[in-house]
Length: 120
Image 1 (cartoon, helix red, strand yellow):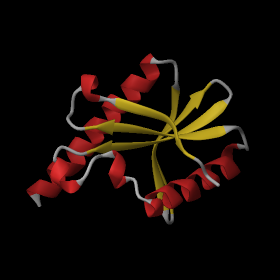
Image 2 (cartoon, helix red, strand yellow; image 1 turned 90 degrees about the vertical axis):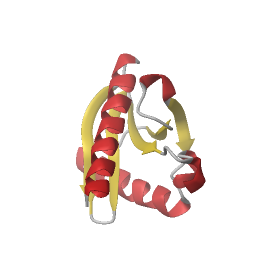
Image 3 (cartoon, rainbow, N blue to C red; image 1 turned 60 degrees about the vertical axis):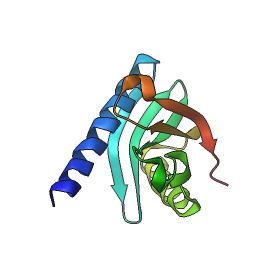
Image 4 (spheres, rainbow, N blue to C red; image 1 turned 120 degrees about the vertical axis):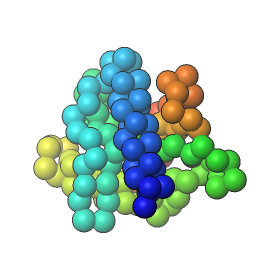
C-alpha cells in the first residue's frame, strides 16, 4: 500500500510541476483532474482562444517504457472522451491535446509536446 501512496503523491507532484511550467509560459489552468465516466484529463488549460487538454506522465524507470510510450491508443481515446464532455459543458472552442513528459520530478526534466495527437 505504501508504494501506491508514493505513486499517487509523485503523480500529484508531477502534475503540480507541469501546471507551474504551463502557467510560466502563459497558459491558464482551468481544471485539474477532470473526471467523467470512462476518462480523465490531468490538466485543462486555456492558451489564448484554445482549450488545451494536458496529459502528464511520469516514468522514472525506462524498463517500463518511456513516458510518451505509455500514452497508448486506449489512453488517447479516454482523453478524447473526457475532452468531449468538457467541451459539451463549457462550450465548443478550438482545442488541442498536449503531453507533459517527465523522467524525474525536476522542472528541468519537463518535455512539453504541444499538439501531441488529434481527436479524429
